[in-house]
Image (cartoon, helix red, strand yellow):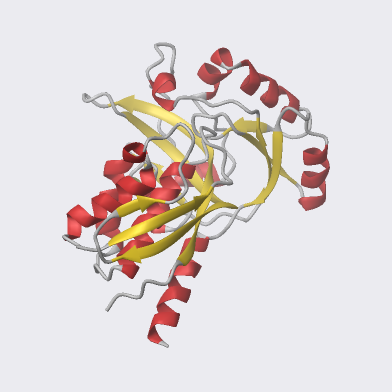
Length: 290
């Protein structure tokens, strides 16, 4: 018997602490090295099981068709992979800026996969869910695995990494960057030399190879980076448009955020040791046992 009580689940954002493009496969996909830092900015996904098998999106996303919605696609992919006859109503409260390079859509999809696997009792393990997630997007597996990670390949080869829980100022310059256009840009650097986790953790200089391309094409991102760099060393996350800077403490971060130009949005966020989705999953299992 399936409990049809609604449950809520977090879908956290990430920062790419650096992003190197180190090659390109024959199929056109780019080979990367990056570090994913999970942060405490999160969307909220509400799931209500259905016995009729329908996947229904409760909260439409402006400009996103139902069949393109990553939450809906994730639920349908889990149905196909497991043969489950169950469905779900999916509600979504968005807090992570869309098109900001923070992995919001990928995280939403991962949360749907992890949560519905429990709710539907389909019994897949983390590797199974990550493999399904990779079909939806290169960033989905890191959110499925619920840990900060060093990533290689197209972003799917993951190794857990311990990070120190820094406080960041995150600035969203009110513009959307289309990731495919940035990766297809002819001027994109695609041959950055390989580095290692040890070099990264020792403080070796790193960067985001996508940043120059985005700055040249999106004046708002360039302006936000120049403004934030006046306060602390700043970098773009993923393919943008959000930019971030690590701060000495929360007081400094709050002061910088308070000075942010009104046309943009500033967030003070903290790096997490693991995803809040893991805590929600353990809490759900505990309730189910009791």
